[in-house]
Amino acid sequence: MKRRTFIKQSGMVIGGTLLASPLLHAQNQSTADFKSMRPAEGKRCFNSKEVEKLINKVKSSMADNELAWLFENCFPNTLDTTVDFEYIDGQPDTFVITGDIDAMWLRDSTAQVWPYMPLIKKDKELRELIKGLVKRQTKCILIDPYANAFYKDVTKVSKWQSDRTQMLPGIHERKWEIDSLCYAVRLANEYYSITGDSSVFDDDWQKASRLIVQTFKAEQRKDGTTPYTFNRETGQMFDSPVHWGLGRPVKPVGLICSMFRPSDDATLYPYLIPSNVFAVVSLRQMANIHESITGETQLAKECTSLADEVDAAIRQYAIVEHLDFGKIYAYEVDGFGNRVFMDDANVPSLMSLAYLGAHQPDDALYKRTRAFLLSDNNPYYLKGKVAEGQASPHTGQVNIWPMGIILRAMTSTDDKEIRHCLKMLKTTHAGTGFMHESFHKDDASKYTRDWFAWANTLFGELIAKLYHERPHLLKTEL
Image (cartoon, rainbow, N blue to C red):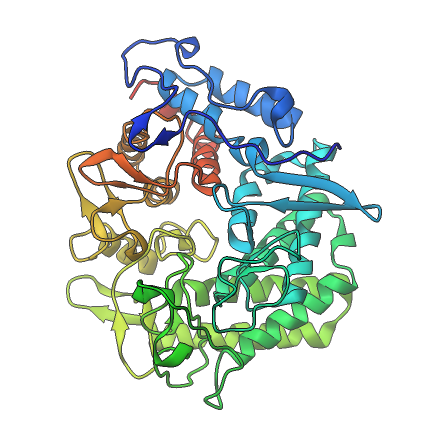
């Protein structure tokens, strides 16, 4: 496969001026009336026949032409604009930037390619792309398990080079987030589950998995210490943990400290519960891999033991009584009895626990937690003139995240609720044909990040999911 350079998507809003936009929300327009916002085929970073087939199948089944146009633009956005794929020393290597930031997050890169995973059995080149990403993520973890984002060019100097932490060559940012390591496990496990190709679990991957376990254990901070600190000179208080980069005190109870949320904001209390739940899932996946594939039975037992310990601590310290909703998950705790009730639209979130496989949508605990998340009791659930949905402290008190609306639809079992989410997504893209990081609750033309591939591809994943599981929802116009 020929290596391509990244190509920025077209049709952006610059300085509040709408560029190359079709008419908005016009009734009974044909799909042809909506101009494709994808790069020309020859300028795309990666082309997949199976992805194109699925786009055509799904579009042809959709009655709402604007929604179909959004799907066509968004679903392939990661492949179209963010992938750098080549062979290095005979092995596939895949680097995936997040979009308007030319670095690769372990979290984002997994999430960006996740919707294509069901297609890799039929598409050899797409399968190689995923395999290359597993290998690239393994390299990143071996550089530094505490880093969240990396460069392919290790000579590139990060804009965050002045951060007071250990900034090694090749690192874009070194914010310790539990989920970064979990996402790498999630990708490798899913790749093997679909393909049966165990070659990804080579010596380097096994070294990386040991490093993951070691890092998780270190961040349980049972002796009150940690090798990790982080401090940044910034005007934003959420860019650094308090107490000179150590974070607030915790009582060692078996939970894992995460100094940052998946939003890249510093945690309030270091025990970030969605990420601890995600860690339990990942540790059990690693245990199975080592037990059944690598033969590292002792490491498998270590993974299982740690998963059991974290899970028990979650049940004891993170499932707590809420004044109005009964026993639900807290978002963050400290082991002393303090907790914060909220959620953040980034994944892992409490809302996303059913999406990540930690819960079924009808589990009583998850349903109670979800009811809280969609209520006025959640300080980051916003209602405005153009939409309602989950927000993030990362973007303040007035911006809703499309990702939160998408995850609400993904985890819903109610057709009416899903259609409500689809309508909001359809009417808040500000004419660009793409999802954004966030938009103002009263005016969707005021938004952040015009090239955010994860949100785009996640929207495509939602539509593909509905096509396979609830096709009737796509057969009527919104």
